[in-house]
Image (cartoon, rainbow, N blue to C red; front, top):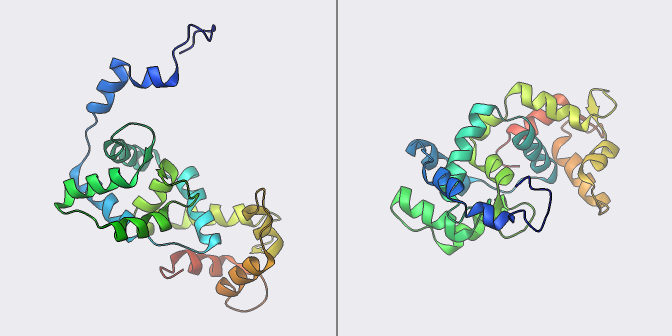
Length: 209
């Protein structure tokens, strides 16, 4: 893989078919309870507000412990039957059938993907899997919530303003003002136009958002 001459260097596809990679994938040992819990969390995961979804993605990609990540990686690898680093609807259905003894309906799988597949790629990537498969109460401890709050609170004022929400949530496309207003209205309990850490914590721990 480190061969300088690209004409002699194996492709990514060739590497994935290499005997060592194939054998390592087969030898993955996963605790059955971990797989069952992950699949259950996936099925019960629901779509969140834009702000909560962004926060969960940040925590899932940046703040999950090594032990948590390794266990989830083993579960993900077991479900990822073709080893492409993404979970298809068919792979989720097969994993669910194997561990629960029943097929998950097309309606259920579509509902799950609508909630979990946040980039609408048609597949569940690893970060999306971590966010949805972890127990949300364990994912949202005080340390992680504090770090995520600081991600939004750019000026360190102790509250999140509409402009700070825009800075975090906007990418190439302009986030509509009505979306920002909707987020503030949902979270801003005291109506001062800003989000305090307490309000942020309530939002993150509210299962209905």
